[in-house]
Image: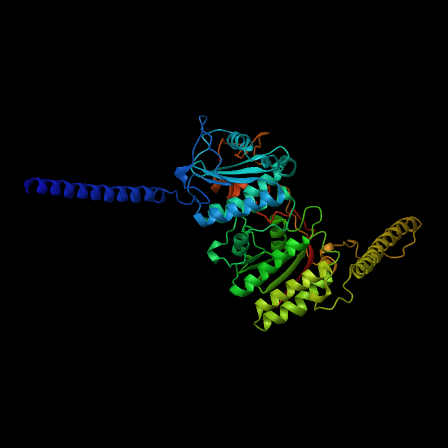
Length: 502
């Protein structure tokens, strides 16, 4: 019995051991099968966090996509928005444009170009592209350019990207918006495609800013905001502002015509047309060489209305038609309390006349063509010529009479003295054909920045570094001292247009 009991005990123990081994093997197999799932890499974000960017032995950042935000300045949404746009630009246009935000350029004047050369080994399209760099601690901006890109992205246009698109919003605290605008403008320059749009930037331009966001320079002129509507007098509702700003953006995109609206509480006593011309010149409305711009200005305290035309638009949007839009559209609207609707209607009339789209024009165009305007000018000139001839002839006859008096007096003959001996003078200001003076403000703009052949890291000539704030102050002004923010068109005005009151 003892032997059987021992055999039973051994068998029982053997079964238990085999069962334990089997259970252990099952658990081990289950554990190992779960390991790959637990350690599977998480989806890679579209843009890495700032601490994830790596540098090589030379201290240059490795390529990590078209948006390299080392400083962590942009939100994930902003980074993805920019990256999506830049990737599509690469795919559709064969142009590689990238944005790099770093704490510092480390005092390296060729910082942008070194990265461009490094990254071009991986992205050949950089030959047609560029690298926009913002150094947050240095407060500097730079632009590295591929060889082919330099033909389009000239130093003057690079300055425009910085001064007119990036720095105004960046300095005002709207950093992401400033970067988006600069990226979009650079993409348009490199591709030549004016239809490109960054949806979020476009929407931002159609959202009415707070009145505190409108800034003025030391001459009292408002800085360009990027939108073609600057409603400092707050006469447009949010929906009216969005409608008008969107319409003028589309007009610029589709035709190149730049019409802007400026409403202000006061001009501080300055004549409205002079005030308008100075803003037109500061903003440089219209395309360079085409000068197809126009500006509608409204002053609330003095009830002044003004339309100023560019050199290229005054031939179609004549002084007569400008006056008609003021008298027939704006004045009734402002007197009737429908200012916003009146402004929109006036702008559509201006656009319709300039683009020859009669469906937008509600005012009478009779007697308002360029040919009719020329006849008025000829008639006015003829009247002035006759007046001059009258006064000159009178002076000549008076002089001959004085000489005759002297000659006859020598023989004792007196025919009487002439009267009114002072004569008369002609003043242009008294002529109805020069009802206002042309603005004497110069449109010249000194070139203020150094641009190296291999790199566009911009700094003031008087200093090795420049801050964002200094560029947004009067130190970045034209020769007249005003701030240099403008629409980017480069257009001019000769002072044409008309003024009125409601």
